[in-house]
Structures are given as C-alpha cells and as structure tokens.
Amino acid sequence: MFAFFNQYAQEILLHTGEHLILVVSAMVAAIIMGIPLGIFITRKPQYASLVLGIANILQTIPSLAIFGILISVPYLGGIGKAPAIVALILYALLPLIRNTYIGIQTIDPAIRNTGKAMGMTDWQLLVQVDLPLASATILSGVRVATVISVGIATIAAAIGGGGLGVFIFRGIATVNNQLILAGAIPSALIALAVDYSLGLLEKRLMQRSSRRMKIRRRSAIIWGVVTTAIIAGIVFLGWQTPPQIIIGSKNFTEQVILGEILAQQIESFTNLKVDRRFNLGGTFICHEAVKAGQISGYVEYTGTAFTAVLKQNPISDSQAVYSKVKQDYAQNFNLEVFPSLGFNNTFAITIRAEDAKRYQLKTISDTAKYTEQWQAGFGYEFLERADGYKGLAKTYGLKFAKPPRQMELGLMYDALAKKQVDLIAGDSTNGLIPVLDLFVLQDDKKYFPPYQAVPIFNRQILQKYPEVSMAIAKLEGLISNEEMQKMNYAVDKEKIPVETVVRNWLKSHSL
Image (tube, rainbow, N blue to C red; front, side):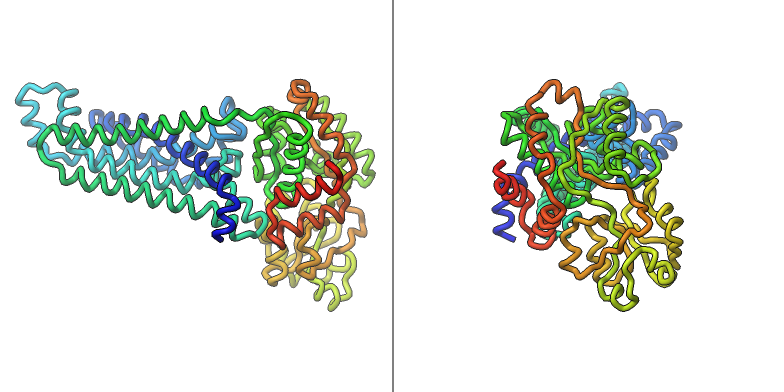
C-alpha cells in the first residue's frame, strides 16, 4: 500500500486539491446563503416552517439523484465542477440554517430585552448580542455541513467534477481495493481533520469570556481560516494550466483504457494539454457532454449509438450501422465519428463454465429452459436500452424467477464467479472471462448489433485543433479483440496501472 501511494502521490495530491476546492467553494457559498437565511427566519418566524421544510426536503433526496438532476438543468447542466458545487451547497444548507435559527432562538430573552432597554437597534442586537452568543451553535452547524460535504463530494467524480471520488469509481470499475482506498483514506482524513479543528474551535467558543476583545479575536481567527482557504483555492485554480482537450469515458475498465489511449495519443502527437474526465457514467452522460463541448471526445460503440442514441432497431450489418451513425451524428449533433479502432465489443451473455458443461449449453437459446431457476445480473444501462434486457428476453424467451440484480459493470464478473448471480450481460473483450473460468454463450439469433469501438469528437473542437484529428486517425484498426482483452486483464487482474498498460501498448505499435 505504501508503494502504491508513493506511485500515485502526484495524482492523489491533485485530486485532493480538487476535492478541497469543491468543499471550500460549496461551503463559502452555503455559509453566505445559509446563515443569513437562519437570521431572517428569527426575525420573520412566520417563514421558519417553510424555509426549514424546503431545506429538510433537499436533505432527504439521495445525493446521486441530486447530481443526476443537476446535469440536465439549463445553463448549469452537463458535467464538471459547477453542478457538483451546487449539489454540495444544497446539502449544506439545512445544518447552517437550522443551527443559526436555534442558536439565536435559544438566547435568554432577558439579555435581548436588556439590550433593547439600552436603546440598541435590531442590527446592533444582532451583531453585538445574538451572533456572539449563538456563535458556538452556528459553528456546530458549519462543522456538520463541512463533514457532510467532504463525504458527498466523492460522488462528484461520476459527473466529471473531479476529487477523490475519481479513485473510488475507478477502483469499483476495476475491482481494485487499492484504488478505492486511495480515494477513501484521504477523504476520511480530510473529514476527521475538519471535524477535529472545528470541534476544537467550537469548544473554545463555548468557553469564551465575556470580554469583547476575545470575541473579536476568535472571530478574526474564523474569518482568517475561511479567507486562507478561499485564497488557497484561488491560487490552486490559477496554478493549473487550463486544459485544451478534455477526454471522457464511461465507467468501466475498457472505457478508461480507451480514454487513456486517446489522451496519450494526443499528448504524443501534439503539444496540447489533455484533461482526463473518466468514469463519467453511462452513454447519455458522455453523449450530452461531447455534444455540449464539455468534453472533447470519448470512445463509443456503434451498436450503442445506433440503438440507444439514434433509437434505431438493431441490425447485424456492421458497415450499415457505422454509416448511419457517422451520418446522423454529423447532421444532428455536429459530432465527428472516426473509423473503428479495430475491435468489436459486442454484449456477451456469460455464465459459469461449469454450468455450461453440466447442462451442455452453447447458445443463448439453450439457456431458456434453465433461466427460471437462475438469478440474472445486469448493468443499469442494459435494463433500459433498446438492445438490452427486454428485447433479449423476448427474442430468446428468457424468464427468470426473480427480477435481475442491478450492479456496476465492474462487479458483475466477480458476482458470477462467486455464484451470487447465474447469468450476466458482459462484454466480449473483458479480461476476466478466461481468468474466472466463465463461458460466453453464442448469440445464435443475432440479437445484438455490431459494437465497433469508434472515437467520437466535437467538430468545433476539431476545427480549433485540427492536429487532434491527425493523431486520432493513426489509431484506426490497431486494436484487436485479443489485444483489448489482454489490456483489460492487465488492469483488472494484474492490477497494472491503466497509464502503464496504455503506454506499453502504444510503444508496441510504435506510437
């Protein structure tokens, strides 16, 4: 583990910095909004139930759902840090509003009445009485909100927001505990450090003396910490050279490898800086992102583009599928579809080799009489797409005793090998198939369309950087099914870093 952290030290520091920027940006905005709202409802108590009710509702919405909703909001939609920060702000508001409200409401009325008797205005009461006496309770709300934000910020990686969640999602996709810990440990340490520091400050505020100088000194410390964090974030953002090309990928091993191939190829043949936004989620997140220019390009599969995006009925003619995708993507989305990278990663209906041997199974049709006793496991997207589960079940007459288990693509193979499920819809180039002694059933009714891997890029970005087209064109037809399977195996089973696997493959082709 020490060697692993040493190897990834620079990347861990980078993503830790991104994580801190997300949390600090969100907390500064949430404090600016939340504390004044809490003060407002102490002055206008008739609005307290409404404001606190809305904040409570926002807190109950699952965090992943909030991120998913925000990527489709006009003017904010898409991937990146903006929707991630907005989501964190929404989650931080409740503890800030509630603690400000409670802190001021629980002040002894006699103290406030004394102030009024001395001729204090409402503003003077707020600044000189309410906020100083409620400061410990308010800081407790800041503490809770910050710790919540540190944890939830890990999900930002799913929509390209960066942060330590990048390691966690990559680790889940490749079933690599070291990568998961590379994200989880720094995130936990940040949360513990924040909780301890703010807890210590909160304790000291509760023990404050009545002398105004001490209150001012402590207030200065709080604002000093906040200001330092803001300045550090600004410096960190300004320190980084803005990326010129952004390469995305979906959230499984092969996609991360293909995204890294595009990135390294561009860096090798051009002078452009490439930003990697991998593990973005499903097809539609990547598609919308490349349409909007939020990523420059990613690798798609022609069958997926044909059925899921263009809503066409599956066909088996690979050239017809490619031509239709290339033409419609150019006309409808202003996207350039490059020629195939060389391999066809069709869906692979997979079972354990021992079951195939026991029941003499070779084709998907052969399994129909056994599936009523089996548990299926599918990825989230496969259950919804046109060429997915419903059509497969109808074509082959598959009936399962229980609804299919939904799981991340990277976990399905291990679940099948451990007999947690009995049949999965994997991909034909996955390196775990031979390692885990699994068996791919023949698609005897030609249900699945061809899935050639093709780079897709935003045309406006290609016009701005024409050298990218020349670099990507050199990859045409270079990756065979066997090579892709070997690269997947190297990452999934041998735990070789994606960057190293891709670098070695590029060298083997003199790239």
